[in-house]
Structures are given as C-alpha cells and as structure tokens.
Length: 145
Image (cartoon, rainbow, N blue to C red; front, side):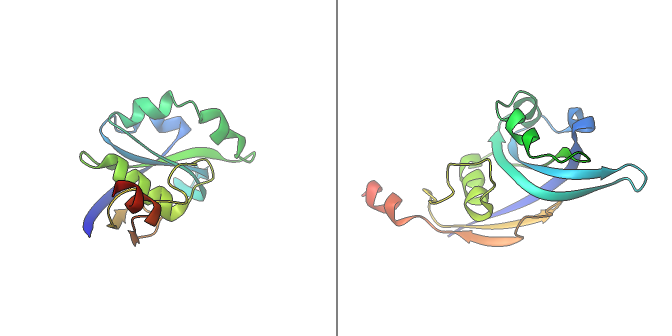
C-alpha cells in the first residue's frame, strides 16, 4: 500500500483568494463564515475537491464556481485549503474525494481506480479525515486484468 503524507495550508476566503498558491497541488472548497473581529474562518461544509498544476489559476477560472456559491447562506463565503502535490495528483484527489464525498464532486465517489493508498493529512484539515485508506475498487481490478 502506498502511503501519502499531505500538509494542508489555508484557509483563504473569496476576499483573499489571490493569495492561494499557484503551484501544483490538491485543493478543497468549503462554505464557511469569516469572522473579521476574531480573524477566524469557521468551516461549515466541504463542497468540492480538485487538483491542478496551478491551483489558484484553476480555482479562479473554475467552471463550477457558480455551483459552489449556490450552497452559501447569507453570512457565508467560499473558503479554500491547499496541499502541494507534484506526483500522483490524480490519485491524491481521487482518494480524498472517495473518502469525503463532497456534494459537488461526482467522479471517484463510488470507486477508487488506483492501487490501495493510505493518506495522512496534517495542517489545516478541518472537516477532513486525518488518516484513511482508499482501497482499489473491485471493478477497477477486473477491468485492468
């Protein structure tokens, strides 16, 4: 089983999304509330997980931004976290989606088409499992043979 360690950075809100790293990685999109007085972000729901070789550029131009915003309540904003990933970005994204099943992701919800993977997440991991295993789906193994 391949082990992958992730260090999440964040949280950025819509007002600060220009500071999201424009590097290779995996990102999470949340709905949350930014308390300006306390200078804290309170995350309420994980909406989407994605990957890109330029995360900030991808988020800013993402075709699902309007869908993400439809989930926001009056006092909420979109919030983001990011973990750098150079190799196996698709595998990491798939494992996170398979484990967490965000409502705006459709791929990888019911199957994990990669070899067994253990994921250990640290840093800004609110609403994410710190440790889990994504196991290759039986359908994927049959197709590969």
